[in-house]
Image (cartoon, rainbow, N blue to C red):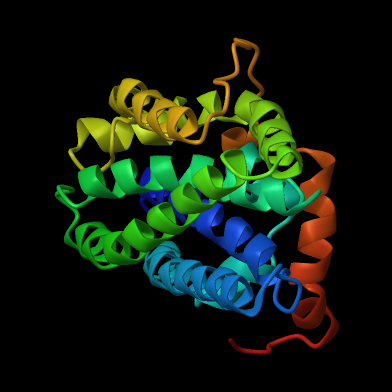
Length: 250
């Protein structure tokens, strides 16, 4: 098994799995019917991407591993998503801010992954970027709508941006698997995306009349399997059916 490629794929896919679970949990709880459906569709898009990644990962791992095994039967420390995507939906402002901060990165990442020498990853990226382009537009529009809306909506989205900002720098950290895949022209050198990311984020925040956080203190650990307390609770919901009724299929 190509361990580095396997871990690299999980590092990409787990972000979409956990964020998809967060967005899916909002079904029926959106502030309006249109927004509720949009959040649900974003969740479905992310899960669709996850399936493609996990099917490829299962093929690489072998030993009759399935996409369900990878999705549902790993322990918390075996998930390699960034801390940003596991943060809870404290209120709608957090939902939008989390989505916006990840979408901005996700789009830039997929643009580069399309160039991968791994034809499977390149194909997944080319398909996914069409969906993520919509995700980015949706979350960016909502940031501007909330930021330049009422005094309350402005306060809520600013609060969410301030709290979640501390998790953004981890997006550009490289694991050992990342470094190996970059050398083999398979992976994306995320360090090269950082400047453009913060430029794009700041542009939207300025349009939304929001302040760009000045904090230079960031948290990390998710890419190495060290998570916040929130992931354990999320996984207990995500994995419940599969662990209670083994061998269920998606």
